[in-house]
Amino acid sequence: MRKRTRAREYALQILYQIDIRKDPPEELIAEFWETEEAESEVKDFAEALVKGTVTNTKKIDEVISKYASNWKLNRMAVIDRNVLRMATYELLFCEDIPPKVSINEAVDLAKKFGDMESGKFVNGILDKINKVAINGKTG
Image 1 (tube, rainbow, N blue to C red):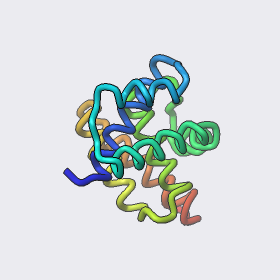
Image 2 (image 1 turned 90 degrees about the horizontal axis):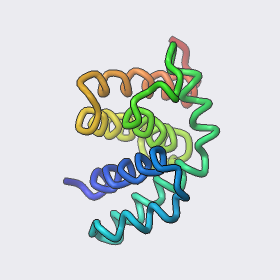
Image 3 (image 1 turned 30 degrees about the vertical axis):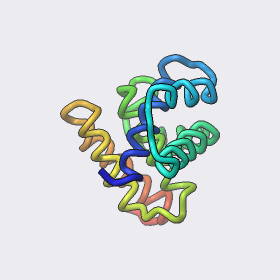
Image 4 (image 1 turned 45 degrees about the horizontal axis):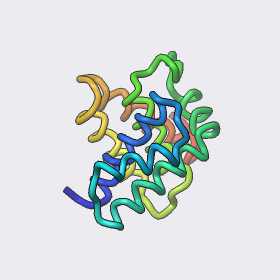
């Protein structure tokens, strides 16, 4: 598994804990690394994704809500919601990561950790966000 793919898996696990437990992110990040070993590059990227996503959650949630037709964030599956948040963070704030990579990685995470429809659900919303919010295209 590629380093960034592994880092995204770790980041998703941490974001899931933050969402469920509502404990301070710093505590949950530290707690997570007590039981997981990772190369510093993987750990650094995972933490950057978590911290960036948490710091920008308000803006990220506004964007997701706008493009998730007929879906309220609090009604989404926890995995789907956090995959969407992390990928939207990448789309909005990580200019060094091609949007196609962020979307493909998110879809793979949703398929691996979500339910049977998670991949399609995540892909549909992220595709809209990328086309309209990021690239300014319509349709």
